[in-house]
Image (cartoon, rainbow, N blue to C red):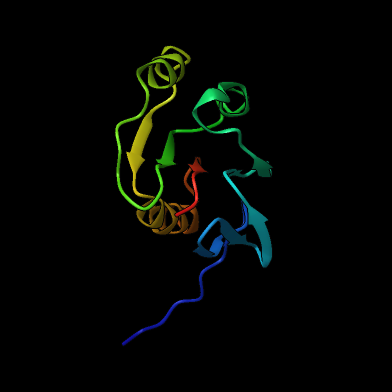
Length: 117
C-alpha cells in the first residue's frame, strides 16, 4: 500500500463536525459556515445568498450541506445561484465535508456551504 501526503494549498480542510459545529483548519466554528479558498465565513443559511454569490466566477461547483440528511434546496436559493452561473450540488453535510476535502486535495475550484448536523 502506498500512502501519499495530502496538501491543501488553496484552503483549510474540514477536520471534523458535530452537533452545531465544524472544525476547520484546526479551529472550531459554530453554526452554518461557508468554506472556500477565501477562508471560512459565517453563513446565514438559505436566506443568505450574498455570501455565496461573492464566490461567483471563482468556483467550478458549490456543495451545499443540508444538515444530517440530504434535502432539496429552496427554489429561490437554487435559482439565484444558477442564474449567477454557479453549479450547485446539495448533499448531507457529512458527505459534503468529505467530498469537499477530496476535491480540495486535487486542487479543484470548489467551496462548501454547510448547515450543521
